[in-house]
Amino acid sequence: MSKKITLGPVGYMPQSAPMMGVELSPEGKALLYGNIVEEDEAMRDAAKALLTMKNPTIFPGPMVLWDWKEDVADKSSAILDLASEIPGCKIIPMPDYRPKYPKIDVKAEINPNHPNLTILDNRIKACVFIGVHCHYANLSLRMIRAGTDCYTIAMCAEMGHEEAMASIRDVHASDIQRFKDIVIEVRNELGIEHTTTMPPENPSLPKEDWGALTPSDYGEYRSLIMSKKGEHVTAVE
Amino acid sequence: MSLNKKLVDMNYLLKEAPREKHFITGAQAMAEAVKRASVDMAIAYPITPQSEVMHLVGDIYAQGHIKEYYRAEEELGTMSAIAGAARAGVRLFTATSGPGLLRGLEAIVSWPGHRVPCVLGVLTRVINAPLSIQPDNIEMAYLMHSGIVMLHAENQQDTFDMTLAAFAITEKVDVYIPVSVSTEGFFVTHAKGYVEMMDEELAFNEPDPYKAPVPAMDNEVPPARIQRDAPVQKSNFMSYLIHSVWQQEIWDSNQRAMKYIYEYLGGPIEVQNPGADVMIVASGCAAAQAREAHRYAQEEGLSVGFVKVRAIRPWPKAEIREALATTKTVIVPEHNIIGWLCKEVKAAIPNSGIVTEGPRVYGGMTLPVELIMTEIYDALGMKSEVLQA
Image (tube, rainbow over all chains, first blue to last red):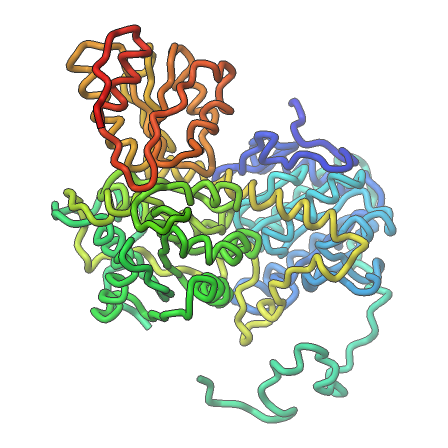
């Protein structure tokens, strides 16, 4: 297979994948290095990358970090299952899309405005984007391909991402579980021994104490808190 | 709030729903499309008298075909309000013309970067001094580098179909940038033509604001609390890179619209008599005149073909190049002085020397078919009668 999309760093200001002629895969197919392939083929290559490259990391985005609609909890649970089957896998969230000012904590999170900082500092050589809104995923994946040597995997609830080395589209919880099964299969083929282990706690995040929250903890979002603490609002506009 | 219509997908609406023939103006055709698009909100600063589209859209709001209608202070206010309303995930329509378009341009060119899905009607009119309200499509040149998808309607039927299709294209997750539907003021907006339309009780499926490449702003649902903030001003350190890949993403999104232009409109160009010695390439109202010149040429047995360009952005470079691969002369009639379509055609082919500059009319002048025929006769080395003004 000729690779249209390759591991970076591909340059200072590289052409975008769509402008290089890469098109999103149709339903039921995936993208691997910019080529349309069967989903299993893309998943196997992605699994091999996660199992053989250093510091594999999953970057969950806001769409899987909050339990905001019916299928999200299942999906998030499947992501934890997937992480537990990849030796040494970390989870570093992309909780929002605003630039971290004045400086991002690269151990704690990744941000679409400068995703390469988290990738480079943690020496991540293979990663999974999941639950990130497509616009921000595209920006991140492009910057990572430009400036790092990280293998990128996009597990997208919509149509996928041209910039990723492996892109799986229309992802539901069952697809994540299927990917986890493929990871185990490839791991056994490679003779890698592993005991199912949950990823480590994010070291930079303080323990959350919801009981002690005050409106000031919400920072600029405090104006969005409509009710007082303990108040139960039954009527809404 | 529902409009109590039978909701259907765009493919059914455009390709399968039974239609009846009506004799209406281009402005009416655009408003009739809006009527069938489940529009949540139309925001207007009606620019009289070039286009009565937003007047008519106001009427159909009163008739209950649109949920909200808001008259802004002026065009910059209109276009800014469109951007604001889009944050809430609603389906939007507005239309403007000439000077109004330029007044709103600062907001319009920010729409793609803000990932604003909406449909913009552009009913073209002179923008230059001296003041004129006559048709001239030079304003489209200003939109061509904005990142928005641009369709150009030849006639009333195109105006109807393209406007409807635009609502589907703009909301695709992999596109999600505005789509403009342009047509010539007066020549199309005020003239009547036959338009085949489906029943007005049918309407396009309502939008799903969560099916988007950016968060919808819904303060009740956690992920949406993330503001769709333009981030680049806040970090000098990385601002250049994020801005550059962001710009790339807009043009990638523009390019991704092409497959939907094929799906809903049959492709970005229409080709008649491919391989002819002379090809006429035209868009919008000029395409109607070019089509007529092509018919004259066929009757005279001349080797003349015709390319109608439906999509100005994304620009169908490969399709144009293929359509003109073997021709000896290309004629590009236009309704503007700068020849923006001519420049695009020249840039698309390797042998740009075969492209004739014009004929062009502007300032509201009509484009007689004879003007195009003169160029055809010249290209074929035949004597022609010069049109006397």
